[in-house]
View (spheres, rainbow, N blue to C red):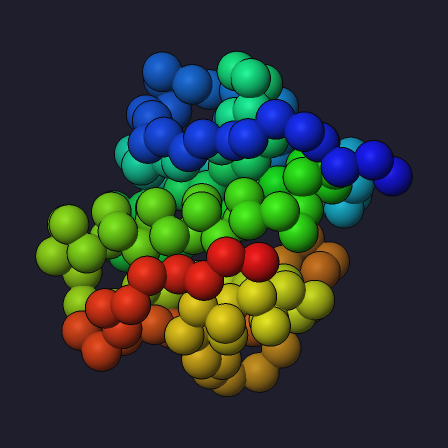
Length: 154
């Protein structure tokens, strides 16, 4: 597989502002690639969450969201862009936004196959593995008062 040549950028957006772009990435990653049913992918949290959108030459390549309660979720990067820092940049933008909003802790439910990614960013796992949309997950937590460092790039 050839590596994309264009650099990417990440910006914070509202759902109403960038719904089509955000949905295109989530549909490709979660619905098509991971077989998450459409009715489980979309929820009322989208409209009230802050979203991060990664683009390359204006084309959507990644997404993430920060819910009003401090949960981070829906981090997705198109397959051809994985391993190039887009996931790191998306997560870093969500952590910065959480800090700006005064959160002391952020939570997320990580797919088990992505645990190492989140651990590199300082998250620690809690509890037992559970299924979400048929995919094994673990709850993870990051104390923002003890992790002022910026996220590493992969």
